[in-house]
Amino acid sequence: MKRDCLPQKENFAFGNCDGLTSITIPNSVTSIGSSAFAHCTGLTSITIPNSVKSIEFDAFSDCKGLTSITIPNSVTSIGSNAFRECTGLTSITIPNSVKSIEYGAFSGCSGFTSIEIPNSVTSIGDYAFKNCKGLTSIKIPNSVTSIGDGAFECCTGLTSIEIPDSVTSFGVNLFEGCTKLIIDEQLNNRILESNKENEKALEYEDEVVEEEEIYLYIYE
Image (tube, rainbow, N blue to C red):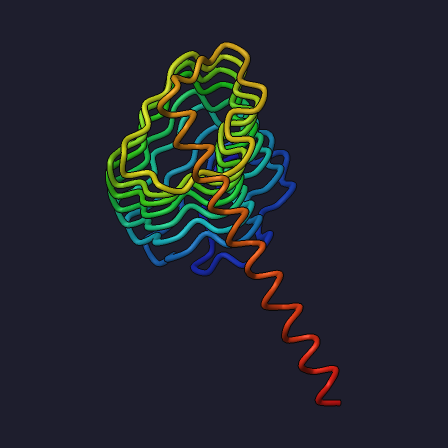
């Protein structure tokens, strides 16, 4: 079944449409809403026009039939869990317009063997590529400054990764469960140092909150 979208895509617009196999989104659409095509397990192809600027939370999650998708140059953000558990995806094109890859955006995409992150991306969110078990290598561009918690957790096939000096903030459990990956000493030290700094920042925030609570208590 092939279906043209309506001009505006509301949240969960086509969610759970098991019989949907392909769809063409018209140029009038600027955003693909939350869970718009979630759990459309029969969807094998989709055309996203250049009018789309954002792909929201859970937009294509669990679309297990998708094997490839091209994101146009107009898109600037890929939302949390946008392609979560799209296990059939073997490749995806991320354009130079994308600035951030949010929480769990590609988590569970076990069919990926490689992925190219463009120079426009500045941050990789928590668990962005968690459980991408088919990934064997990845190169982080110089534009990235932060990588979130567990971003590559349980990528059991990962054997090599390149992370530039531009990355100064590392999350915890970044490579937890990556049993084939060997981290060199220099990178390991950078990660440990970043984690220490993050812990200090959290401790400071807790102290500030405690002081505010004491002040409010006295004031009352």
